[in-house]
Amino acid sequence: MATHEFRIVLDPLPEAEGGGWLATVPDLPGCMSDGETPETALKSVQDAISAWIEEAESLGREFPQPTRHAA
Image (cartoon, rainbow, N blue to C red; front, side, top):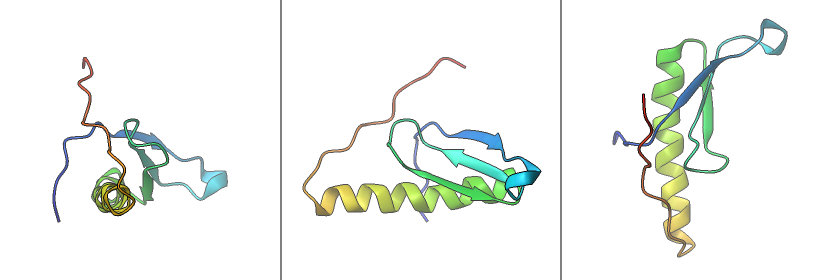
């Protein structure tokens, strides 16, 4: 699995929504994944990033390069 340089935001999900963690990629609209732990959410979102980029390429669309954000 390729590792991408996109910024990933991790947020805990409320127990009322099943708990776990949500990983979103602000540079890629709609690109997100979840997992029971932060680590599984991060691993899963890498697959989502690859799929997002693959789909954009198959449609002939350009996709943004990772932006740099201050820590």
